[in-house]
Image (tube, rainbow, N blue to C red; front, side, top):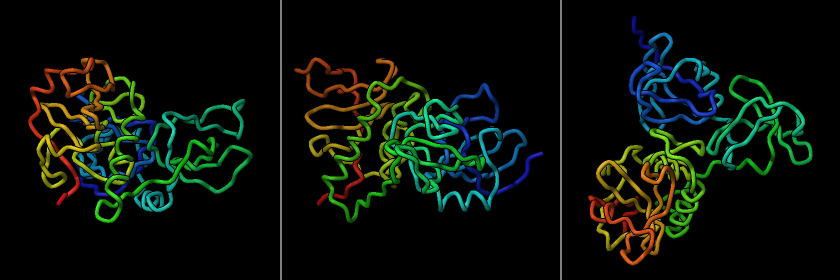
Length: 277
């Protein structure tokens, strides 16, 4: 029997598969990153219908969640350490010769206790266990303000973030350094800078303004049928494509060796978060 159970939960897996249907063999629509707080919209027993803070809905298995509304509220307020390295180990003690408690990817949220030992920092995981990570693998969440911050700086940060994923394998529905798809790459590059855009490969006007190709600047998005890429400047764009098995850079310029005529001919829209003049 389906039960309405609107409450908050914390993702407690390295990456949690967000399914289109509440079953293991269902297509994956998105991935939730470790430490992300989601809203449980419906309790289906082993499966929970959830909504992310960027309004994406799907189904997560209960084993990937810590379902505790009060603790999730506390976590949301206090998990202010974000993994900045591609993939890191959480160790039981502040040394590599210890044993691993968990593996986290870029964008994972955890609580820092403030305790340090040489190059290690103590952290708390959603299951309330404590572990240790390298201090230089952590940062603070970035929240850029497109109304107040310098536009050029924001554009540079978006491109820099996307470039972190260069060479990452293609994974349908993926959104981490373990595997990522086209809209996962673009949306997570914005998300890690505190900016929410639509997760799928469609230009939604409540998130982005449509512009012409002549107006495109670094950080803007190129939309194709069922595909999306980020423009990085000099006629180049970065995208995750199954044709190349992962994240690569291609060109809009026919004179360049990495030119993709099939994509250049199929551009259907250009999107920007900036209002312009």
